[in-house]
Amino acid sequence: MTAIPDPILKVEGLVAGYGKMTILNGTSFEVPEGSITTVIGPNGAGKSTVFKTLFGLLKAREGKVVFDGRDLTNKEPRELLEAGICYVPQGRNIFPELSVFHNIELGGIAAGRHLTDMPERIERALDRFPALREKAKLQAGTLSGGQQKQLEIARGMLLDPKLILIDEPSIGLSPMLVEETFRFLVEQRDLGVSILMIEQNARSALAMSDWGLVLELGQTRMFDRAETILHDPRVGQLFLGGSLETAEKAA
Amino acid sequence: MDQFLQLLIAGIATGAIYALAAIGFTLVWQTSQTINFAQGEFVMLPAILALAARDLLGLPFWAALILATAAFLLLFGLGFKRFLVDPMLKHGVLPLAIATMALSILMKEGAKDGYSAQAAQFPSLVPEGMVTILGATVSSRDIAVFVVAIAAIVALQFFVTRTRLGRTMQATAQNPTVARILGVRVERMILLTFLINAGLAALASYLISPIYLAKFSNGEFIGLAAFIAAIVGGFNQVRGALAGGFIVGLVDNLAAAYVSSAYRTAVPLALLVVFILFKPEGLLGRREERTV
Image (cartoon, rainbow over all chains, first blue to last red; front, side, top):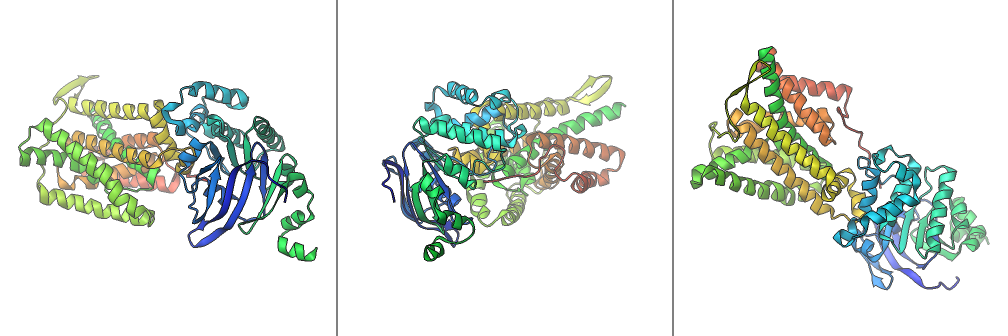
């Protein structure tokens, strides 16, 4: 494993799951600052569960989450947002009957009244996504799937997060929109934002990422430079349904 | 024609009251999956509490009204959420619904034993009398009831759409998980909807009791009307509950006059059946769709 430069997020021995079912069996990894890290792994590997546990939606039974030097294990989303993390979950996560503008505005709710430059921030978000500006006054439910995803990202960016957790941003999007979304993430990375992304579209995601993290059965199997992961024969094996352990034996 | 206009105005007035109850019902359903089968009793009780405060504590009526409203908000806004909804929701929507049925019985019997089994006069908060509109003589009370109820609904709508707190509440209702992810204090927003529900129920109570008298059993028909209004309008929509309230109020009043007063409550029920069969999502409803 390559040495990791300055991790912004450290996850140590996370144990979590749903009810009696344990999905994360001591998951540990680190996210390097100012880079894009893509999480890949077969269905049920616990990718989304990691995000939910990091973001305080699922209780970590054991383990530790350290972000930017602060212990944020089992904290409410509000505190994580204040610390500088945002979470863009999988699927559609908008408020369909509120206007696009008001949906974006809700991205700033965690800052409460301290945020004095809210209108400017919303303006900037609308500048970045012209499609949203065009429909700013319409109900968010009228947006296309791709525009809804853009809305979620714009909303998540409102408080200038240091780390973005983004789960399957490409699902249901046209190839052009996927490219646009990836381009936005690269742009943010170049501005110094760290990104942790889950992507089923593993090949194109790794191609634009700096690091790759392979999860299987709730544990980190590999962590390395994205291109190394991309060209690792075992990764192909993993996505064809075999497990890393059997692949290792075979090799 | 004269009679028709009178019925129309009476229907709109009672419809506006049903709408108040139906809107509260919808809000509480949206934010916390509570199907409140005690909603009718929520509308029955504040008037009884006010009368009890006046008669048993000897307070002047205005003071009794304030005390009753405050007690009701505390017990059936905050208390209802804390001590019934929160513990029961963990067990599922159905056990919670059944618990609200039990609460409705408790409230009804409590009002009967604690205050009176008789129907009691409730002083009207709006001017009584008759006015002439378009050549028809109509009750000024009906018009005032309509105006007050609509003013409350407009104020609520203003709060919900034009203030950030109101929009946050709406967002919580539309998707609580996403609201939480954005850092909304979801529990507080839910409590707010319960307080608003209790407030709307109290207002409905003070408006309807002068018309139908204050009686422990009033909740039965009001609850049914609000329930039907909410479903006809679309269970997940405040605008729908408003429309549903007016429809049920009109159908109710017109049916009493033109069909049969004995079948008065049956006609809205028939309306409900028609909607469930042919338009289950209601007039303005959307199909439930929640992710994350």
